[in-house]
Structure formats: structure tokens, C-alpha cells
Length: 172
Image (cartoon, rainbow, N blue to C red; front, side, top):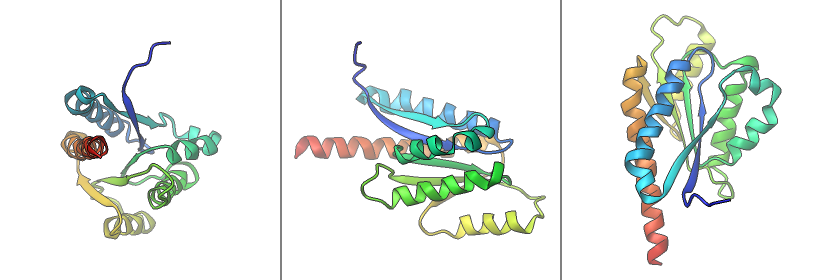
């Protein structure tokens, strides 16, 4: 088997419910960053996540293990945490992983889709809680087209930090 020679940096992409278009937008943005910034330096942001909400119920342990192995976590949220609120629990797991120096998680970010017609007090309270958390960056968007440049910017920062860390360790 031939080695590919790329340093892999896993990114867990969590987008429950009917956010398939937004999930695809995030993957497209990651692909663009890989092509323009990461791959020329033999790095690659590799996306992990679920394509079907039911998988989080059937394979919860495996999903949690995947999150523990990731360097970055992207949560896209509007108004649904999927079956049994498990996507919310996975977000909290990602935050715990980021706070554990023994694990590779470096950052957790949330992309919060506008929900101007939302009236459910529980959803509104959780959206507010996310927006007020000082330990995660929250970005707001209203449609998938406006999400893409934000994901590109965040992932570009990640690649630059990877390259800076690599240069610093090479110089040491």
C-alpha cells in the first residue's frame, strides 16, 4: 500500500434535522480550503459526521469515539437536536474533549441558522444559551449561501494554525 503523505486533521460535522443543504455547504467549503490552503502543504481537513439522524441512535458509542478523535467540531443548528437530543449531547462531548489536553480537539464552533418564526421556549432558550457561551465561537447565518464564507474563514484559520504549529515544531 502506498502512503499518501498527507497529515490528516479530522473535523466532525454535526448538522441534525433538515439541515442537509447546510451540511453540504460545509463540506464544499472544507473542500475549497483543502484545495487552496491545506493540500499544497500536505495537510488535509477530513470531514466526519452522519448523513442520517437515526445513525446517532444506532451507533452512539461509535459517534462519540469519532468525536474524541477529531481536532475540530462544527455544529450547525437551527431548531432540532435530532433523536433524543443526542446531537446536543455530542456538542457537549466535543466541548469536553476540547477542554481535555490529552485529546486532539482544538476548537468547537457553532453556526446558528436564523429562526425568526421559532416560538418553542425550549429551543429559544437553548439558542440563547449557545449565543452567550464564552467558550465557543458562534456564527449566525440566514441561508446556506451565507454560511459558506463563514465556514471558509474558520477553516482557513484552522489550516493557518496547523501550518504555524508545523513550522514552529520544524524550527525547534
